[in-house]
Image (cartoon, rainbow, N blue to C red):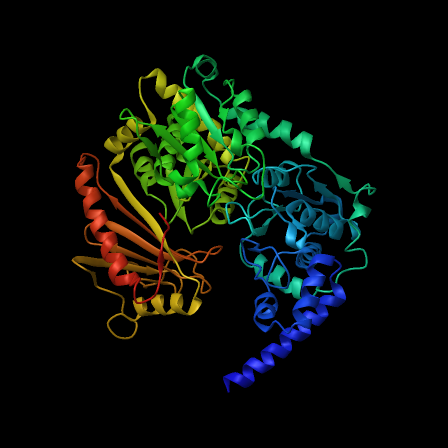
Length: 610
């Protein structure tokens, strides 16, 4: 039976590959398909044509290469045609307003694909339909796209980037007219429109037509000017910045961030940070790092540590390649370097931004309209600060698409959204960008450090002060790699049917479970009607366990990588300052979760590389 099904599937794939040859005008990917067909390379054809990239709320993210399952000229044309038709249905004034398109420096010579090439083809699709396009003439940080959408009052935005993914990957990230990433049902509507518009339009491949078109605009100079003018509003200690002896090292990890962080430092009146010379120019090969992701910690920062030692710099600021995330490291008195986790930097920035706001707003009533947000897998430190200081805290589902959309709703109600963050080193420090922004976060972190220096405090010491005042929040997060969707599904199904059908675990090793929330099925044991309050999604796995010792742990799948992630946090009330004891308790619980809930040997899971 399976053989017959496989035979039919292979026939379908052969047909898909033949259709491809009718439409693809990129000689590299065309020749590759011809070669695979001529050599009957069934396995490779299955990889290329076995499925179409799924368009989700994060847009697209896949390796560059040949076929419907990869990012290439033809799939970009098809995706943009579908998106264009969906926007035409959604906005009657699309031809008046238009869209913005940005791109990073990624390239894949074997398939002739690059972010810039994909951005030009996307622009061609819109312009061929009479829709104005604001196409950046050069690489930009991802946050410039959502900024441009709201600043220029456009209908939508596209950013061609794969952020910190491996060098072979690329992505297509979509923003709605409100300046936030799309959420459901737009993803489903766009996905359907793509399926209905697969055949390239007559002018689809002629990207030279955009250069002569009056519909093409270059927002590069004006957005550069206006963005920095806007983030300057978050500069509160210009004199300290001017005078500080504190030195900073910055790395853009072969991405786009160098020039923009230099500009941010300039508008805040800082001396320029020392740039890691081997990593400051954009390079799609990412030659000096194994993974171009500063979240992976010390391995990515080796060259930054060396430069900091040489220049006597105490603080390192590292952006990921599209400059929407920020990692921070500080040299300790012992001479060791501490890389702050996303939760620790979130605590520091949340404290700092609130402190600056409070200084500017002495009126006691003003605080009732102030909000901060974080995602459900991030530390609850902002909740603790909010409770004590009197502002509002809300948590959303994982990802900035939820925080950006919620922030916009609150702002439309006249509320002030000061800050939002997620543990994956993403920070929204200014409401002018309704997404994570590593450029503004870098310079605001620098100002905080310079201010603390005048009080003879380091970032690490201030973090301790925050925990002493608002309660220790000890966190631990990691992941396992798993490429087999079947194993992932079975792992989560086992947790849902642990002691018989529809029963979740009551213990994990010596730790007792007091509550379970499953955002895949919509179950929450802590609610009276047993229904989860946060939105649920059947397409992704996510279960949160609460333990009687006050620990909260979440297991979830990643939308963009072959990972099963976990996040854990132990919150102690203010006054409980035995950090080591809390850390030991959390470490033991995490080991139990790995052993009993993940079962890495049985499920053949690869641990996070050291």
